[in-house]
Image 1 (spheres, one colour):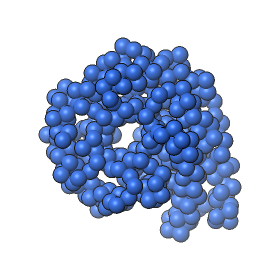
Image 2 (tube, one colour):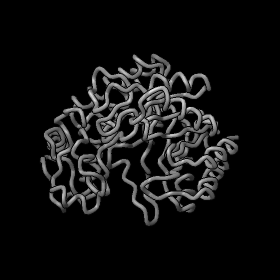
Image 3 (cartoon, one colour):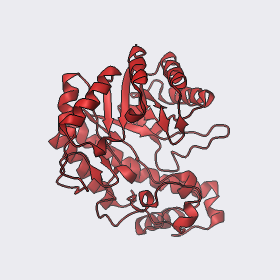
Image 4 (cartoon, helix red, strand yellow):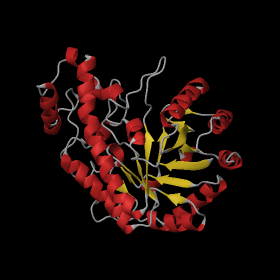
Length: 343
Protein backbone atom coordinates (compact mmCIF):
# COMPACT_ATOMS: atom_id res chain seq x y z
CA UNK A 1 0.00 0.00 0.00
CA UNK A 2 1.40 3.36 -1.08
CA UNK A 3 1.37 6.45 1.14
CA UNK A 4 0.70 9.95 -0.19
CA UNK A 5 0.45 13.15 1.84
CA UNK A 6 -1.18 16.49 1.06
CA UNK A 7 0.61 19.61 2.27
CA UNK A 8 -1.54 22.71 2.02
CA UNK A 9 1.10 24.76 3.84
CA UNK A 10 3.66 24.41 1.04
CA UNK A 11 2.72 27.75 -0.56
CA UNK A 12 4.28 29.49 2.45
CA UNK A 13 7.65 27.68 2.42
CA UNK A 14 10.65 29.67 1.25
CA UNK A 15 13.33 27.26 0.06
CA UNK A 16 16.01 24.74 0.95
CA UNK A 17 15.63 24.83 4.75
CA UNK A 18 11.92 24.03 4.66
CA UNK A 19 12.50 21.41 1.96
CA UNK A 20 14.84 19.54 4.29
CA UNK A 21 12.39 19.73 7.17
CA UNK A 22 9.50 18.48 5.05
CA UNK A 23 11.59 15.66 3.58
CA UNK A 24 12.50 14.47 7.09
CA UNK A 25 8.82 14.17 8.00
CA UNK A 26 7.96 12.39 4.76
CA UNK A 27 10.79 9.90 5.28
CA UNK A 28 9.54 9.10 8.79
CA UNK A 29 6.11 8.24 7.36
CA UNK A 30 7.70 6.22 4.53
CA UNK A 31 5.92 8.47 2.08
CA UNK A 32 5.77 7.57 -1.62
CA UNK A 33 4.06 10.68 -3.02
CA UNK A 34 4.04 14.29 -1.84
CA UNK A 35 1.33 16.77 -2.91
CA UNK A 36 2.49 20.36 -2.18
CA UNK A 37 0.05 23.25 -2.59
CA UNK A 38 2.52 25.55 -4.33
CA UNK A 39 -0.27 28.03 -5.14
CA UNK A 40 -2.72 29.28 -2.53
CA UNK A 41 -4.70 32.51 -2.27
CA UNK A 42 -2.16 34.56 -4.22
CA UNK A 43 0.99 33.07 -2.67
CA UNK A 44 3.30 30.83 -4.67
CA UNK A 45 6.39 28.86 -3.65
CA UNK A 46 8.04 28.29 -7.01
CA UNK A 47 9.55 30.45 -9.74
CA UNK A 48 6.82 31.57 -12.12
CA UNK A 49 6.87 33.79 -15.17
CA UNK A 50 3.08 33.70 -15.36
CA UNK A 51 1.87 34.27 -11.80
CA UNK A 52 3.15 37.20 -9.79
CA UNK A 53 2.35 36.15 -6.23
CA UNK A 54 2.65 38.20 -3.07
CA UNK A 55 5.86 36.32 -2.33
CA UNK A 56 6.59 35.13 -5.84
CA UNK A 57 10.39 35.10 -5.53
CA UNK A 58 10.38 32.04 -3.28
CA UNK A 59 11.42 28.67 -4.67
CA UNK A 60 10.55 25.80 -2.38
CA UNK A 61 9.58 23.42 -5.18
CA UNK A 62 13.05 23.13 -6.72
CA UNK A 63 14.89 22.19 -3.51
CA UNK A 64 12.00 19.96 -2.46
CA UNK A 65 12.22 17.95 -5.67
CA UNK A 66 15.95 17.40 -5.04
CA UNK A 67 15.37 16.30 -1.45
CA UNK A 68 12.52 14.02 -2.48
CA UNK A 69 14.55 12.49 -5.30
CA UNK A 70 17.26 11.40 -2.86
CA UNK A 71 14.63 9.34 -1.05
CA UNK A 72 12.55 8.14 -4.00
CA UNK A 73 9.58 10.29 -3.07
CA UNK A 74 7.49 11.53 -5.97
CA UNK A 75 6.47 15.21 -6.06
CA UNK A 76 3.18 16.20 -7.68
CA UNK A 77 2.38 19.94 -7.27
CA UNK A 78 -1.26 20.88 -6.80
CA UNK A 79 -3.14 23.11 -9.24
CA UNK A 80 -6.81 23.84 -9.76
CA UNK A 81 -9.41 26.57 -9.60
CA UNK A 82 -10.60 28.19 -6.36
CA UNK A 83 -7.95 28.99 -3.75
CA UNK A 84 -5.39 26.78 -5.55
CA UNK A 85 -5.82 28.63 -8.82
CA UNK A 86 -5.19 31.81 -10.76
CA UNK A 87 -8.04 33.95 -9.44
CA UNK A 88 -5.81 35.96 -7.10
CA UNK A 89 -3.65 37.17 -9.98
CA UNK A 90 -5.78 39.96 -11.48
CA UNK A 91 -8.22 37.68 -13.26
CA UNK A 92 -11.56 39.37 -13.85
CA UNK A 93 -13.58 36.38 -15.00
CA UNK A 94 -14.51 35.03 -11.58
CA UNK A 95 -17.60 33.43 -10.10
CA UNK A 96 -20.49 35.89 -10.00
CA UNK A 97 -22.95 35.29 -7.19
CA UNK A 98 -26.69 35.60 -7.82
CA UNK A 99 -27.07 36.70 -4.18
CA UNK A 100 -25.25 39.07 -1.81
CA UNK A 101 -22.30 37.61 0.07
CA UNK A 102 -24.08 38.09 3.40
CA UNK A 103 -26.72 35.58 2.35
CA UNK A 104 -24.22 32.99 1.10
CA UNK A 105 -22.09 33.35 4.21
CA UNK A 106 -24.94 32.11 6.39
CA UNK A 107 -23.95 28.65 5.16
CA UNK A 108 -20.42 29.04 3.81
CA UNK A 109 -18.01 30.17 6.49
CA UNK A 110 -14.96 30.59 4.27
CA UNK A 111 -13.38 33.98 3.85
CA UNK A 112 -15.48 35.69 1.19
CA UNK A 113 -12.41 36.30 -0.97
CA UNK A 114 -12.08 32.57 -1.53
CA UNK A 115 -15.34 32.75 -3.45
CA UNK A 116 -14.77 36.20 -4.95
CA UNK A 117 -11.46 35.04 -6.42
CA UNK A 118 -12.72 31.66 -7.68
CA UNK A 119 -12.21 31.84 -11.43
CA UNK A 120 -15.20 30.43 -13.24
CA UNK A 121 -14.24 27.37 -15.35
CA UNK A 122 -16.93 28.29 -17.89
CA UNK A 123 -14.52 30.85 -19.36
CA UNK A 124 -12.19 29.37 -21.97
CA UNK A 125 -9.64 32.04 -21.04
CA UNK A 126 -9.52 30.76 -17.45
CA UNK A 127 -9.01 27.18 -18.54
CA UNK A 128 -6.28 28.22 -20.99
CA UNK A 129 -4.38 30.31 -18.44
CA UNK A 130 -4.59 27.56 -15.82
CA UNK A 131 -3.27 25.12 -18.39
CA UNK A 132 -0.33 27.46 -19.04
CA UNK A 133 0.48 27.29 -15.32
CA UNK A 134 0.49 23.49 -15.52
CA UNK A 135 2.73 23.64 -18.57
CA UNK A 136 5.13 26.01 -16.84
CA UNK A 137 5.41 23.63 -13.87
CA UNK A 138 6.11 20.55 -15.97
CA UNK A 139 8.50 22.37 -18.30
CA UNK A 140 10.58 24.09 -15.61
CA UNK A 141 10.59 21.49 -12.83
CA UNK A 142 11.35 17.79 -12.77
CA UNK A 143 8.00 16.87 -11.25
CA UNK A 144 6.54 13.36 -11.31
CA UNK A 145 3.01 14.43 -12.03
CA UNK A 146 0.26 17.01 -11.54
CA UNK A 147 -2.31 16.74 -8.78
CA UNK A 148 -5.65 18.43 -9.46
CA UNK A 149 -7.59 19.97 -6.57
CA UNK A 150 -10.47 22.44 -6.56
CA UNK A 151 -11.10 20.92 -9.97
CA UNK A 152 -14.69 22.08 -9.97
CA UNK A 153 -17.10 24.94 -9.44
CA UNK A 154 -17.68 26.29 -5.88
CA UNK A 155 -19.34 24.14 -3.20
CA UNK A 156 -22.83 23.11 -4.28
CA UNK A 157 -24.15 22.75 -0.72
CA UNK A 158 -23.52 26.39 0.18
CA UNK A 159 -23.43 28.10 -3.20
CA UNK A 160 -24.40 26.42 -6.46
CA UNK A 161 -27.68 24.80 -5.45
CA UNK A 162 -29.27 28.14 -4.56
CA UNK A 163 -26.87 30.63 -6.15
CA UNK A 164 -25.50 29.38 -9.49
CA UNK A 165 -22.89 31.51 -11.19
CA UNK A 166 -24.23 34.35 -13.31
CA UNK A 167 -21.08 35.40 -15.11
CA UNK A 168 -21.42 36.00 -18.85
CA UNK A 169 -19.93 32.61 -19.76
CA UNK A 170 -22.34 30.72 -17.50
CA UNK A 171 -25.29 32.70 -18.78
CA UNK A 172 -24.32 31.84 -22.37
CA UNK A 173 -24.03 28.13 -21.50
CA UNK A 174 -27.36 28.23 -19.63
CA UNK A 175 -29.10 29.96 -22.52
CA UNK A 176 -28.05 27.12 -24.84
CA UNK A 177 -29.06 24.24 -22.58
CA UNK A 178 -32.05 25.78 -20.75
CA UNK A 179 -33.20 28.62 -22.98
CA UNK A 180 -32.70 31.29 -20.33
CA UNK A 181 -29.80 33.01 -18.58
CA UNK A 182 -31.16 33.12 -15.04
CA UNK A 183 -33.15 30.61 -13.01
CA UNK A 184 -35.84 31.02 -10.39
CA UNK A 185 -35.73 29.31 -7.00
CA UNK A 186 -38.35 26.81 -8.15
CA UNK A 187 -36.40 26.02 -11.31
CA UNK A 188 -33.21 25.47 -9.33
CA UNK A 189 -34.99 22.78 -7.30
CA UNK A 190 -36.07 20.90 -10.42
CA UNK A 191 -34.00 17.70 -11.03
CA UNK A 192 -34.06 18.25 -14.77
CA UNK A 193 -32.67 21.75 -14.43
CA UNK A 194 -29.98 20.51 -12.03
CA UNK A 195 -29.06 17.80 -14.55
CA UNK A 196 -28.57 20.33 -17.35
CA UNK A 197 -26.66 22.71 -15.08
CA UNK A 198 -24.38 19.84 -14.11
CA UNK A 199 -24.04 18.84 -17.75
CA UNK A 200 -22.45 22.08 -18.92
CA UNK A 201 -20.28 22.37 -15.80
CA UNK A 202 -18.96 18.85 -16.25
CA UNK A 203 -18.26 19.54 -19.93
CA UNK A 204 -16.00 22.49 -19.15
CA UNK A 205 -14.15 20.79 -16.28
CA UNK A 206 -13.69 17.59 -18.28
CA UNK A 207 -12.26 19.58 -21.21
CA UNK A 208 -9.63 20.97 -18.88
CA UNK A 209 -8.71 17.56 -17.44
CA UNK A 210 -8.37 16.20 -20.99
CA UNK A 211 -6.06 19.12 -21.84
CA UNK A 212 -3.89 18.43 -18.76
CA UNK A 213 -3.70 14.77 -19.75
CA UNK A 214 -2.64 15.75 -23.27
CA UNK A 215 0.37 17.82 -22.15
CA UNK A 216 1.52 15.51 -19.35
CA UNK A 217 1.25 12.17 -21.14
CA UNK A 218 4.10 12.78 -23.65
CA UNK A 219 6.41 13.47 -20.69
CA UNK A 220 5.31 10.29 -18.91
CA UNK A 221 3.84 12.29 -16.01
CA UNK A 222 0.96 11.13 -13.84
CA UNK A 223 -2.32 12.97 -13.38
CA UNK A 224 -4.27 12.56 -10.16
CA UNK A 225 -7.21 14.17 -8.40
CA UNK A 226 -8.30 15.18 -4.92
CA UNK A 227 -11.86 14.00 -5.41
CA UNK A 228 -15.06 15.24 -3.80
CA UNK A 229 -17.43 12.80 -2.12
CA UNK A 230 -19.28 11.29 -5.03
CA UNK A 231 -22.70 9.92 -4.09
CA UNK A 232 -24.95 10.82 -1.13
CA UNK A 233 -25.42 8.56 1.85
CA UNK A 234 -27.95 8.61 4.68
CA UNK A 235 -27.73 11.98 6.46
CA UNK A 236 -25.02 13.16 4.07
CA UNK A 237 -25.21 14.97 0.75
CA UNK A 238 -22.53 14.76 -1.90
CA UNK A 239 -22.44 17.08 -4.89
CA UNK A 240 -19.32 16.24 -6.87
CA UNK A 241 -21.26 15.83 -10.12
CA UNK A 242 -23.29 19.01 -9.65
CA UNK A 243 -20.02 20.89 -9.10
CA UNK A 244 -18.73 19.65 -12.47
CA UNK A 245 -16.52 16.89 -11.08
CA UNK A 246 -17.81 13.58 -12.40
CA UNK A 247 -14.52 11.92 -11.50
CA UNK A 248 -15.92 8.41 -11.83
CA UNK A 249 -16.41 9.08 -15.54
CA UNK A 250 -12.85 10.41 -15.80
CA UNK A 251 -11.63 7.17 -14.22
CA UNK A 252 -13.59 5.10 -16.72
CA UNK A 253 -12.09 7.16 -19.57
CA UNK A 254 -8.54 6.70 -18.31
CA UNK A 255 -7.96 10.43 -17.74
CA UNK A 256 -6.51 9.84 -14.27
CA UNK A 257 -3.71 7.59 -13.07
CA UNK A 258 -5.02 7.59 -9.54
CA UNK A 259 -7.79 9.24 -7.60
CA UNK A 260 -7.76 10.37 -3.95
CA UNK A 261 -11.33 10.72 -2.59
CA UNK A 262 -11.40 13.23 0.24
CA UNK A 263 -13.08 10.93 2.73
CA UNK A 264 -12.80 13.31 5.64
CA UNK A 265 -14.92 12.23 8.59
CA UNK A 266 -14.56 11.39 12.25
CA UNK A 267 -17.28 8.74 11.83
CA UNK A 268 -15.81 5.31 11.21
CA UNK A 269 -19.21 4.17 9.90
CA UNK A 270 -19.27 6.88 7.23
CA UNK A 271 -15.64 6.23 6.37
CA UNK A 272 -16.37 2.56 5.73
CA UNK A 273 -19.45 3.34 3.62
CA UNK A 274 -17.54 5.76 1.42
CA UNK A 275 -14.59 3.38 1.20
CA UNK A 276 -16.90 0.60 -0.03
CA UNK A 277 -18.50 2.99 -2.56
CA UNK A 278 -15.17 4.12 -3.98
CA UNK A 279 -13.87 0.56 -4.24
CA UNK A 280 -16.95 -0.21 -6.30
CA UNK A 281 -16.53 2.82 -8.54
CA UNK A 282 -12.88 2.09 -9.38
CA UNK A 283 -12.80 -1.71 -9.42
CA UNK A 284 -11.50 -3.15 -12.73
CA UNK A 285 -10.70 0.32 -14.10
CA UNK A 286 -7.31 1.61 -15.35
CA UNK A 287 -6.98 3.84 -12.27
CA UNK A 288 -5.59 3.36 -8.78
CA UNK A 289 -7.49 4.27 -5.63
CA UNK A 290 -5.67 6.20 -2.88
CA UNK A 291 -8.21 6.54 -0.10
CA UNK A 292 -8.14 10.02 1.44
CA UNK A 293 -7.97 10.29 5.22
CA UNK A 294 -8.49 13.60 7.00
CA UNK A 295 -6.29 13.64 10.09
CA UNK A 296 -7.28 17.27 10.57
CA UNK A 297 -9.77 19.00 8.28
CA UNK A 298 -12.88 21.18 8.23
CA UNK A 299 -14.81 17.99 9.08
CA UNK A 300 -12.99 17.58 12.37
CA UNK A 301 -9.78 16.18 13.79
CA UNK A 302 -9.13 12.47 14.21
CA UNK A 303 -7.62 11.15 17.40
CA UNK A 304 -4.53 9.03 16.91
CA UNK A 305 -6.63 5.89 17.47
CA UNK A 306 -9.26 6.97 14.92
CA UNK A 307 -6.53 7.81 12.43
CA UNK A 308 -4.90 4.39 12.74
CA UNK A 309 -8.28 2.64 12.52
CA UNK A 310 -9.04 4.34 9.19
CA UNK A 311 -5.62 3.42 7.80
CA UNK A 312 -6.15 -0.22 8.79
CA UNK A 313 -9.64 -0.26 7.25
CA UNK A 314 -8.30 1.12 3.97
CA UNK A 315 -5.53 -1.45 3.88
CA UNK A 316 -7.95 -4.29 4.64
CA UNK A 317 -10.21 -3.08 1.82
CA UNK A 318 -7.33 -3.59 -0.60
CA UNK A 319 -6.88 -0.01 -1.79
CA UNK A 320 -3.74 0.86 -3.73
CA UNK A 321 -2.79 3.51 -1.24
CA UNK A 322 -3.89 6.16 1.23
CA UNK A 323 -3.59 9.92 1.01
CA UNK A 324 -3.42 11.87 4.26
CA UNK A 325 -4.66 15.39 4.84
CA UNK A 326 -2.55 17.09 5.93
CA UNK A 327 1.17 17.13 6.76
CA UNK A 328 1.07 19.84 9.42
CA UNK A 329 -1.66 17.94 11.29
CA UNK A 330 0.50 14.85 11.75
CA UNK A 331 2.35 14.38 15.04
CA UNK A 332 5.63 12.51 15.31
CA UNK A 333 3.64 9.55 16.64
CA UNK A 334 1.29 9.70 13.64
CA UNK A 335 4.19 9.84 11.19
CA UNK A 336 5.98 6.89 12.77
CA UNK A 337 2.85 4.74 13.03
CA UNK A 338 1.84 5.55 9.44
CA UNK A 339 5.18 4.22 8.22
CA UNK A 340 4.80 1.04 10.25
CA UNK A 341 1.36 0.39 8.72
CA UNK A 342 2.51 0.88 5.12
CA UNK A 343 2.72 -2.81 4.21
